Image (cartoon, rainbow, N blue to C red; front, side):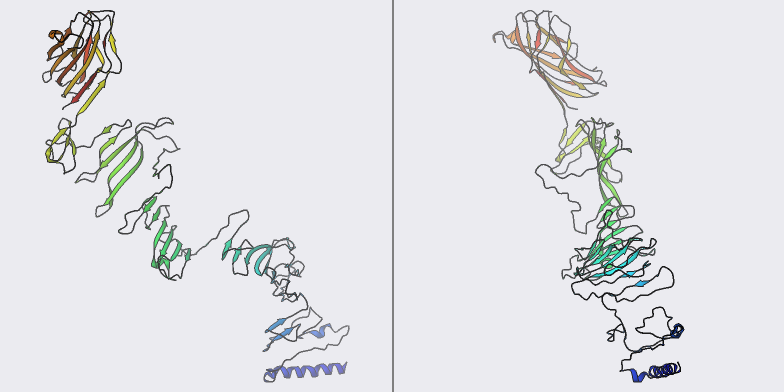
Length: 583
């Protein structure tokens, strides 16, 4: 026992000398071997000892600091790194353990298989219930509270992956990240086909770029080193102009900052207005062309059956059908007046009445702005039945000269419509009525004058009309016929001037009295009555002018049999009336 203690003391002194003489050990490789007597009560003899290769695994590490200037090998006499740990086949690892029943913080570094065809893996474990990793597949996770994570280099597929074993999930990991042999990165997929591929099974695959701080932005830049400077860089940014917006920049800054050196190509404001060519959109869609560019919107369709459409649609809240007077859409033309952009002209589509599933009455209005005004005025309207209206045509006391090659329309003081061409030639626009009798109209057993269904037209107050009636009468023997004009009250300012001509188509031309009869009519009281004695066909022509007074009404030709006969007197189809309003 004394001899053993003396030997141990001598070894300790030699070791202390060697450790303190660093200059003697710089080029030397030193191995420390501790010889410990084996007795039944020798457990405490290992206190404060440094053991390499010891069969004991639970001894307390030495107090103080150990400094080693060379490489240290554990399980190998040829360390190739500052710290080289080797343990036989398929088991070398560095284990960091902390006090506690769950054995927290195990770090697996490298496992060598000894075969070039088998995989090598790097694993990272936590809360290992067994305390021992499973070779090649990471730790077995039987703890029900926390997961285990694996970082695995797979020699078979030449890829690196990060995997997770769910709490209590055994040894079957779920892949979260893969880097393959070409450098492609996959998140949620083990076979990435691009530099970065994000996938998710059964849910959205999302890539989220975030920023912190009120003044920061989330940015995604796209760069190109191509020598062509035409728009080679793009940048997608949020919170660019105001909080909550989205901006897509384009620039020519080669490897520079697309934001500071670029311009906005597409902008979405926080209020969801979209700007193309502007970062200050004033409408749901705002297109701004660069200086000198005329085409801001082009809608193209390639089709054999139809063309492109620009649709403006409107409904009431609900949605509910539009009502009379509702604006269906505006086409506005605006200009800059030095202070603001303001409307100068517009085309308006408007509901002409309440809409239903079977009725969509609509009218269109055209508006322009006169000089010394900023308010557009309606000039022309097209009603639901196709009628043209001129509510905004000016009233002139005297004709104005129209520009060469053009014409102007205006009303006089009594709202008579005039067309003006160049050189002050004035043509009043005529209201023309032409009515052709489509079928024969007949009267029998009656001498009471009645209105003809076709030979009539409506007149306004103080209007001057020119008229002409051409009618073929066919009558039985002894009945003959009679005719009279009627219309609105002439009054003190009204008058009638007309002449009636009769041409008997069946009489001999030698009988002058039956061949031509002329009547002059100056009022509505004259009745032209004809007595031929036999059945004949007669053409009558009535030509004249009528000027109404302050009363409007209907001008009409009346006729009847001169003598009541059961055989009908007829005005034949093809007979017609033609009238023109002069003023």
